[in-house]
Length: 264
Image (tube, rainbow, N blue to C red):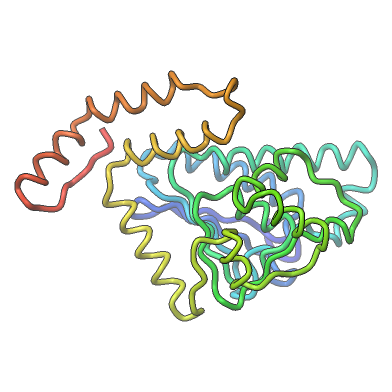
């Protein structure tokens, strides 16, 4: 996909997967085809054991993603059947991102609106430029938000802030987003690239099995208690203690050197 329809790209190098939302003419608005492509790239990246961190970013420097591509609503969401198909496709991509097995980072510059914010909320960490803007304007469009999408927002900012975001449909600046916990850091535009790079380096230098187990545990804790898979987390924790990386971590500590983890 290219041109006016937009595209989603994936590049993998040096242990980092980089997904780019590329539709700058429409502030990186996401079409149905782009949701499908995002899902495909997430499957590819998850299957690549070399990927220790996944970063999502918008192209063009003015937006992370400005939500759904409204210009395509007549062709992609005009009927209930078409809307149901669109929602199923975007939900699958969102679930794949939310449950990606390694850490994910949303690198946010500019607009992060609607479906774009929904994508960012599926990431583990969110770093944004101080000039970024955030909103969920569903109430201005008559759109309904499903339980999973609302839950992810509530999990991050709490019920009261989530209701303010939905009820008012207004845009929040990065300072407000930081205060409510929507983002991890608000960073000057010329510093964001380095802040994200530093975070990537810290994650890559740590034991992959430990990081994966911690992420899985956080995801389980977000579920209803009766639905949690404690046995799966216990198995991941046990694998950490049985790993060569655990030996390497102890040895490196005693030898006062940086550990070299292999993820096994």
